[in-house]
View 1 (tube, rainbow, N blue to C red):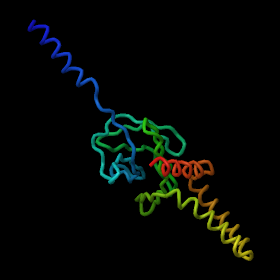
View 2 (cartoon, rainbow, N blue to C red; view 1 turned 180 degrees about the horizontal axis):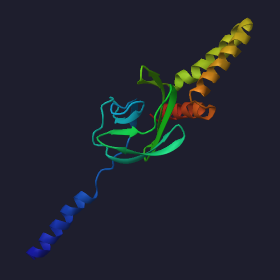
View 3 (cartoon, rainbow, N blue to C red; view 1 turned 180 degrees about the vertical axis):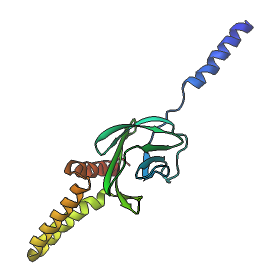
View 4 (tube, rainbow, N blue to C red; view 1 turned 135 degrees about the vertical axis):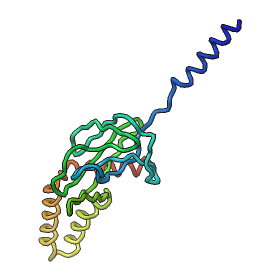
Amino acid sequence: MKKLLLACFCIFFATGFAFADTISINHFVVKENPFAKDEIAIVAVDTAKNIQENVNGIFTFSVNGFTEQLTFDKGTAFYRHKLDKSMFVYARHENDNGTHSMLYYVYRHDSKLTPVKISWILLISIPLGLILLGYLFKRFIIIALIIFCIFLYFNHSNGLSIPTFFQSIIDGLKGMFAS
C-alpha cells in the first residue's frame, strides 16, 4: 500500500513539471547590436519596455519579408545580416496570441545604427495630409504630387515596398482593434 501511494505521489509530482508554461513574444524592439558592427538585435520586451530575460530558444521572425529562425538568449536575438546603409526594417512575429509586427527606420551614421520606430499612424497621415492639401488648395496639387512622388521614392530606395507599407498599416489597425 505504501509503495502504491508513493508511486501515485511521484506520478502526480512529475506531471507538474510536464505542463510548463509556454513562452511567447508579444512585444519586441529593434536595437543596435552592441557586439557586432552594422548589425541589429531584436529584444523581447514587456509592455513597459523591460527586457524579458526568460525568453530563450528559437523563434521564427519575418524580417523585411525573409523568414529567419532567430535564437533568443535572455531575451535578445541577433540578426546576423549587415546593414550597409540606412533602411527600413519590418520585423514580424506570429505566435498563438496573434501577429506582432514593428516597422523601424534604422539610421546609419558614424558607423552607428539608430533604430527609430515608425508608427502606422505616421505612415497613413503623410499621404492623407498631401491629398488634403491638394484638395483644399488647387494651386498646390502639382506640389503635393511631387512631394508624394518623393515620399514614395524615399520609401522604395530605403527598402519599404508598397506591400510592406500597406501591411504595416493593416497590422497597426488590427492591433488597435484587438487591444
